[in-house]
Amino acid sequence: MMSIKNKVAVITGGASGIGAGVAVELAKLGVKIVLGDMNEEGLNAKVEEIRKNGGEAIAVKTNVSQEADVIKLMDAAIETYGAINIVVPSAGIFRDAFMVSPDRETGKVFKTMSTSQFMDVINVNLLGTFLTIREASIRMINHKCEGVLFTISSINKEGQLGQLNYSSTKASVALWPKILAGEFHAKNVKGIRVVGIAPGYVETPLLLGMKPEVLESIVKDVTIGRLVKIDEIVNALIFAIQNEAVTGTTLEITGGVISRGLVK
Image (cartoon, rainbow, N blue to C red; front, side, top):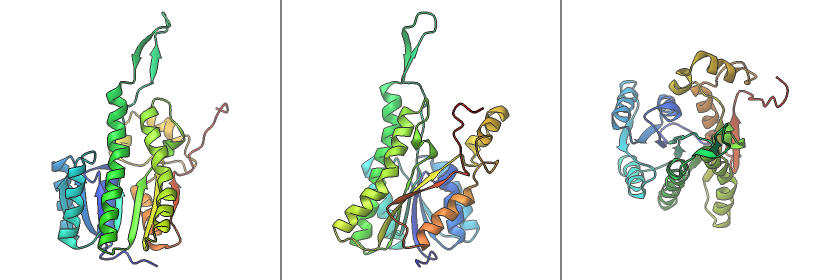
């Protein structure tokens, strides 16, 4: 069983949401945290919170869609703590829109998902995850670090209306653990596992800030009757880190989200 204490975790999207929650909880368990995010103010606040609670953390302003920024982030982890053992690329955005929207009266298309709406999400969620995983892998192999590379997928990998861009990225990264675990095996890379985490509707400020009726409609389709808590995502990460048989797969942590179909 892989021990978690004194390991080094690089987490992107660390200023808020799932990334921030994972960082705080892992730090409580003795993990050294390297946080990347574009929100420098939020990033520094989260690092300060971790340090006040007795943890170790550094912040690196990072745009995950920029190769140079990701290289800087990974180099900071090695220079500061000498290792990378856990990688959580949770930086992500959404730009929801229907691909085409015809006017109800004329039947002609009056609005589309723009190319920038599509590519902005691809660049952060997909390219950003690729750069994060690749640059971490290079350093983990070169410095002989054992550990786990995570990908952060979503229940919406199954396909969500208005999220052609977002769902495409989440479906893609859900496939990566099997591919990358196989590639590492083919190249005789030992000690690095790859695990996907696909959260459902998680208790984040974004969801909690929704209109009550919208939130209620979401929870109706969750069989446990509530949103998934951040610490439940963390528990899944810890399970995957400590259980060395877990690799090449994506774990769904959804609270049992159901699809009602025609049954209302």
